[in-house]
Length: 192
Image (cartoon, rainbow, N blue to C red; front, side):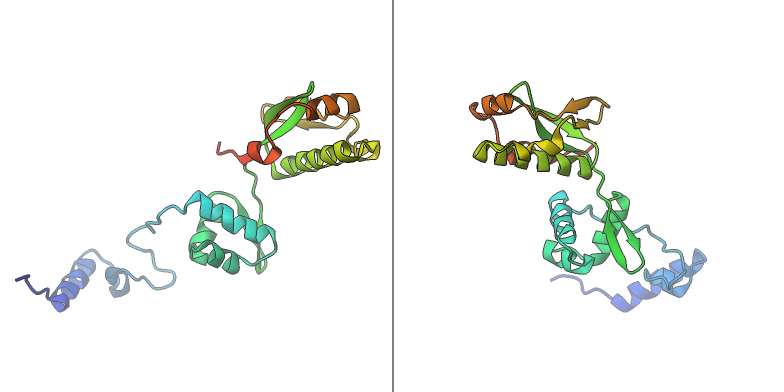
């Protein structure tokens, strides 16, 4: 038969040990009052990267941090700590603003071939995504107006090298005739 625990005696010992160390009663019980220093740093399990990405996508779509945390099955406090620790968001007033600046791997077209590069920001990755979408529309319709806004535009990778976004119709048609991976197969967030 298992020995029965005496919880009252254990609690009294914990309080006595805390008082001997110079801690307040609330600190000794492990629940410090606001403004008191906790005796143990908050031991947080790291949140799964997949859950953070899921919550970030929900926040990009315009949902609140609380709703995004709920959809990703994490507590709002843990999501807040993860956003701050990974520098993925900041609080402005009463709202959380996503400032995701992780590098991303994207696909561009160079000499009728697919080239995967890593761009430093979400804005650069988004611009490449718009470019790839316009290239696909051009290939479907052969309408050159889809390519005009990208004439002479470059994108810079994380090494500082500039890549020209291809707008030559002949090169793009040659590219389309090849069996290259789709954009969503290459695009991904890269951890530094």
